[in-house]
Length: 231
Length: 199
Image 1: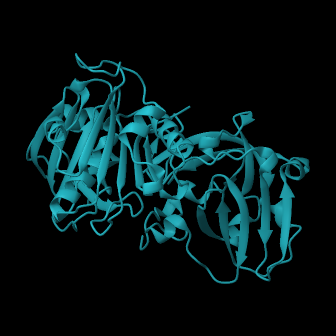
Image 2: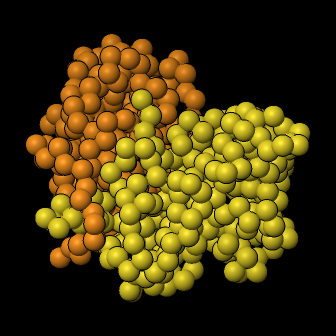
Image 3: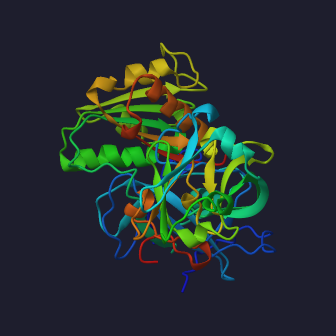
């Protein structure tokens, strides 16, 4: 059942769901949402959890995709109190656990921030001292999710914003795609052996992962989650 | 029993195709992998089948290209819910590769560049059910989709079709691969919706 809706941007919303009996998730995991129409037609989609650790709750942030079947409904039409089916949590690889103490590099492209935000929040919840750096590539400040939370990050969490279409006034960096310099400056040196988590559209993840490899990061320490179609 | 979500109608029009339970029709070609895309030049690529007795049979890229090729048109089903219909591949049947091998093994572990593994019953790699594919839609297979060559086992969920494949290890007893250890199903039949362990 939908408990609350929070607007993130003009086209994205965070939904807080009550899911009876769902175990507490690990940061980075996903859930599967099933919508059923009155005639029994169903549509299933997976969404990353924006927050982990609480049983019976699922918090997801959904970006409406133009022409999509499910996401525009979730963003624009789904009402508080509506019922939907949730299964999960799913996924045992693209996760951060509070017993990890090594440095962490998070690289987000657009709505790829969602599972990485769950990791930042899990770090806070656990009182972890693991050093985190987040490089968040987003079209413009208006399209940023979790803006107020990320503008005042927890101690030990460094956030670098990379604007790809429109940089805020006064930015030293002009708007443009993520570069190896952004990842180098906003990330960790390879000597620190960070675990890297990259999430975003396929093309973004491909290029960000290639940049980390070019900078000398160990491929085995780079975990990726891609979404969206490619040709 | 499904719970009706108030106001949801969904999009119809794909009703004339039958998809496995829980799948939706995708017209793009999503990419799913656990880490960076390995860059393997065809000249550096090789494929090795290792029997349960430790005997190895190697093929270089050129040797693979010299084997009889097949053009395969199949539907593919990803565990993350998308299905793509009528995908066109070019590759070498595992029947051809396994004809060189003397084995009594029942299982195979596919190994990939980058360290990815996935386990399958050997019987599912025989009888025209599996290929080492190096072409997609008339073009060389692109790295993000598993090029230079990937396993193609379209009757199972697509994570079994290991990208960047470099070998098969034949086994008398089953062992779990990468996603299987992470909670996915050992067999992965989309028509029985075997997504996760226990399904």
